[in-house]
Amino acid sequence: MAIASPMVRVAAHGSDLEHARPARKAVRGTDVRGIRTAVITAKKQIAALERQRDLTTEEAEIQQANLDALLSAAASPALTQRVRVLPQVVANLHKRAAAGRSTRGRKLITGFQISPPVIRVGEHEAARISFVLAGHPSSVTAFILSSELREGTSYRFFKWRDAKVGYHVAIWDGTFDGSRNQPPLAATYRLRVMASDAHGGREEVFDQIRVENPGAVTVMPRTYSGVGLSKLMFNGSRAVLVDDRGNQISMRAVSGLKPNNPHNREGRDFTRREFQSLKGRGPLPEGTYSVLANEVQHPELKGNRLLYPSGQSANAWGPIRAPLSPRQVGNRSGFFLHLDVTDDGTAGCIGIHPSEEGKFNHMMSLISRMPAGKLRVEVSYPP
Image 1 (spheres, rainbow, N blue to C red):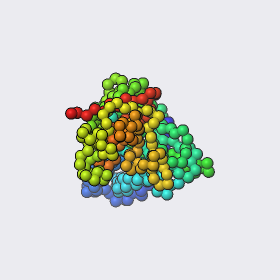
Image 2: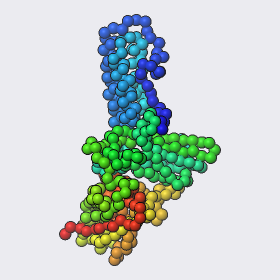
Image 3: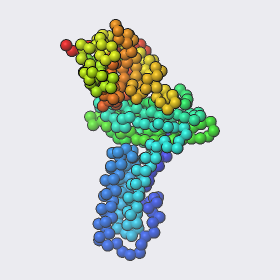
Image 4: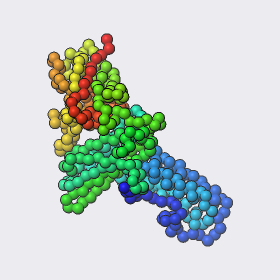
């Protein structure tokens, strides 16, 4: 399936550059040097646009090939005119990327975000795609194509049960349907989100996600791999998710309030094991817990805020969370697995460090797609 891509071409044929009216005077040596300098500068700028995710890798390769054609073309007044517009071509590509990400003035899609926008799949990171549907939506789809110009390309579609108004989330681990057991190719890919309403209104936003995989690693653990999850281990400083084949996702994590937590009036470090019975401040009590796949929670849009069913804000509890069972141990209760958004600790939860957000996304996607049963969570602190 090929999708029309809003390319800005700089090739000699079929481009806007071709319409520049050539001057009649001969090209001087200084002009030839100026042409070469301008084209080389444009090549560097195109490479920078791809690195900062303003272009897909496929688009950048096409633009570079067009620029190489200009470098090898015979010097002429017409070529000089084409080269003069290169800075504007680069600027237009940057503006196009900014417009694609923006939801300003849109009525159906708002709050569009990708976090993190660069994922290191060899380190088990995944991107979280989120947006809010507003107005009166009738359909919504999101997808990534490995190529927007070739038929029969690999793809990844994200589906929702309905196009209801509210907060929507999808997670991408860098793999495509039909080739998930192959190492993802390092490249920048375009994600498109499209929505429509019953009155014929239609909106689209897009952004680019960069996949890095220098070791050509196959993503494991992986959703829909057929391999189940074995357990999650937490020792006070790291949380390690293990699947049935021993593949792991290891993340920095914490439990208990840190001295910088605004609720920690004493300014002490309550993350140590001796404080695990201290209600409202200490770490999660040692023991065995479980997480059920169907209990993974996403916040809901209420007014202009993202809130969990309990009324707690996503600003404090993160974009996804899962309750731990048993819900109460001694005088302690309210245990969750979530992102430690502000890096100041958690009062009785397992908080994944914000720098590990990509791994957290991947872990929560795996847990939410467990085929059945529950995930065993083992909590044990070193003496």
